Length: 207
Image 1 (tube, one colour):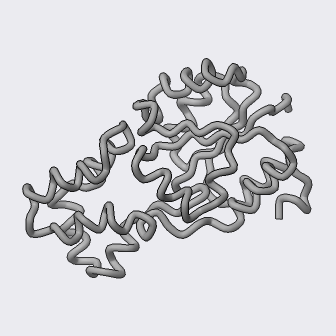
Image 2 (image 1 turned 120 degrees about the horizontal axis):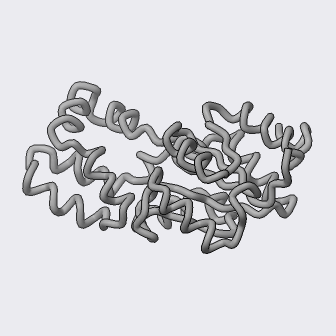
């Protein structure tokens, strides 16, 4: 295997669980959640947040269109750290182990510019990256090839010197097409095994 100079982490479903359905099911019940998600198309609207729109602004825009769901819509912003939760412990240990060894770490994440600092405030490990490539800040989203090109240009790191972990196959495919080393994240142990195989962590460090 070639030399890896930088490890690039996605965040949602890699370091922090991103299944907002779970939160809503626990608060309003599955039936109400299903109706809310369907009638407001909230996931589609959230794509605009990842692309650079304001999260509170989006909610304020949607409430008059769906007044019957004002409570649920407000939760998308007000309860952000309940939606993007909990941390994935083994993945966090891997991130911290790499950082403690001095491995250069980037994040490449589809995340809003409003809510990313809020997640960093409750998850200290999200402050350990050497560079943060947050889609809502740079107004490019995965899997657009332009976001990968941006990282290459901005960092000066060649694609073949980066190892990128993401839970979405299309994001991995886009990176691989540019020559990045990739890992399709499905669960932490396989990612730990990959980091050991690349010589970035020992078996003990990857526990």
